Each structure stands twice: as C-alpha cells, then as structure tokens.
Image (cartoon, rainbow, N blue to C red):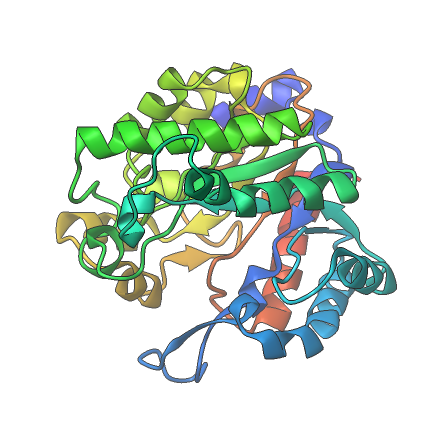
Length: 330
C-alpha cells in the first residue's frame, strides 16, 4: 500500500479541514526585478517600506484566488492595528506567522547571557509573540536566521550543510532555546522551522536541535520542500517527529534541480533561478505521502507557499487553489 492510499484509508487527509489551510503570499513578494529576465536582481518586497501601498492589493489577490486565510506577516513599518484593518478589508483570516533569530557572533557581537545586550537580542521574538497574541494565533514558526552576507550556505553551497561546526550548532541550540522559552512564556507554541541557507539545514542538524531542546517549549513545524531540497526524505521526517508536529509548510519542487544543486553544490539564488520551486502538484514531491505522515486528527495549520512562482503570481494562486480542491474535501 502506498503512503497516499494509506493516508486515504486512515482518513488523515480527510481530517484536515479547509479551515486549517492558508496561503503564504510569497509568490508576490519574492520576485525578480524584471520577471522576463532570470538574471535580474532578486527583490524581497516585505523589506521595502514602499510595499505598504501595494499590500492591500496583494491580500485582495489572495482572497480572489480562493483562499480565506493568509499567513500573518506584519510589516516592520506598520502597526498591528494598521495590519488588522488591511486584513479585515480584504476579508481574510490569519494563520500563524514566522519569526527567526540569529547568532550574535554572526553579526560581530559577543553577548554575555543575561546581559542587557543578550536580552535585547530577542526583541524580534517578543514582537512575534505580541503579534501572535494580538491576532489570537497560538503557534508560530521559529527558524534560525537566513545568512545572506558571505555565508557559505547561501552564497556558495546551499542545501549540503556547508561549513558545519558542532560548536556553532550548540550555540544555535542555546539561542533557539531562549527564543522558544520567550514565546512559550507568552503563551505561543513555537515549532522549529527548517530552512535551507540556515545553520539548521540538514537532517542531523534538525534532529540535534529537537533532541537538545525540551519538547515542552519547542515543537516541529517543518517545511517539506526545504527538507527535500536538503536531501531529507520529508515523509520519513514528518513520521519520525509526528508526535511533535505543530504546523507545516507545503510546497512542491523540481527534484532534479534540487539533486543537481547538491551534486555540484550551488548557491541559493542560482538554484532558485533554475526553477526549483513549483506550485503544489506541479513538481515531484510526494505531497500525498507528506499529508499521510501527519498524525491522525492533526489539528495544526497547513500553509501553502510557493517560494518563487513558476508563472505569473496571479495565476500561481489559482493553481495552488485547484490543488487544494483536488486534495482536500470541501
């Protein structure tokens, strides 16, 4: 029996209601400066203050694409109240957001635990807790920081655990544990979110973090696409940590592009530009198997995201919605 048929027989997918599904609007955010020129610069619009004027239209496209819920992403340049009005006017609900934390030494700092500087290092985590609580969201994706400035895992060799250092991984554990404690103390359940290009990229690193941080303060909120890109079997990984799963990100990949990027280690951006990311159902990932690996009665969020649309973003959202309609009953 295949994982997909096993999932259907056990009713795993049937227990995931459409109310548990959301869309990350990333296909409108992570774009090329010139969509017709793959060599043009990458843009991340959430970082551009001018995007505030365009955000309502993007949220409107999420709704017009057939999604009722969007992943929470409050801009750094707006208040919670402003974002609340924006989401309400779009007629959308909110699903858990994402927060990240880096190593101080990656930024040239050496903070003593308990010092004022150490405490302030986690202000972004407190903001994430505040946002989650304000909007009534009980969980959040907690990730290590992406490193773009000279880090091996983004600028030279993505998805292969480049520049691994056990001592650094232990420090990552300390930082993530502190972030998880802050979130938990504020009533928000964090799940470890794996991401290519961070210091928690490989299966060993993911397992090590989860083994060394108490389950009471940190669950698992995997991204199935980033697992597969790093050569990790997402179905097996979800099954291994089934009892610890909080939420999941679902995307699809061209697995041949992923395999080639590991066989001849390639930088993050170039791999994406080769067409790595695809809308769900258009790639090679065993998404049925991933859903089948979720525990019976899974009550977490399934957030669909296409890190880089393989088509016009306005069409991408409709392709994603059609996949939802095929896989999840009304």
